[in-house]
Length: 282
Image (cartoon, rainbow, N blue to C red; front, side, top):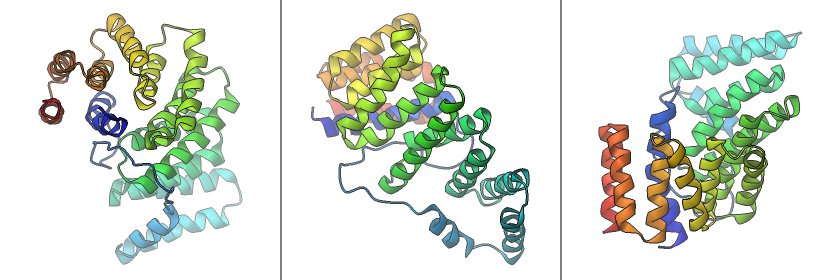
């Protein structure tokens, strides 16, 4: 099984991740596809927002213009933060567009520069990039997420969850295109946590994914097996364990663990996607 096929197979696992964590918006189709290695494309969030703005009603345009004036004319950061958050919520709640929501949320978090706001925004970007199928948006989401996690870590360098988040950005984001250097950056961040606490299962799971992405399937299996042994109900780890066995060519074990994951998820959409993955192994 080649590496590109393995990366494509991780799409099934995005369903598990989003089923476990739950999405806070109605943003995207929750299936991640492998992003082929190619020239990095760019996503201009401001241009995207300007295009979306052309479709607003006059009343909606007037409303966001007032909020934007609060940014340009706000004489204290608190007023600007409030305006950014107002714009973020408008695009999320009224228009149901995720990209502008993330864009303005990031602006507010960076201006506020508190660990709480930076972490909240960073986690949303991480959730988005894990399910992203568009290469340009993936690059934007990953870059923003890394920036936010790094800023939060400057405020609290000892926070293991932040370091796991940062490492995850490289593995699920920049490393997904097959760039081994980016994957290794993520692995190093995660190893810093795992070496301090080998029982940190969140770190072990993402290290396992790093093994899958980098083609180190035996190491990936070892990580996922460790998590499943300690947390037998961990749907995320079980789904990845199934993919690790599939990558190794052990179809019997792969089907076994995919089937277990379906039972745990008890979700028709998830079962449908997993059945497709099982059929692809035959």
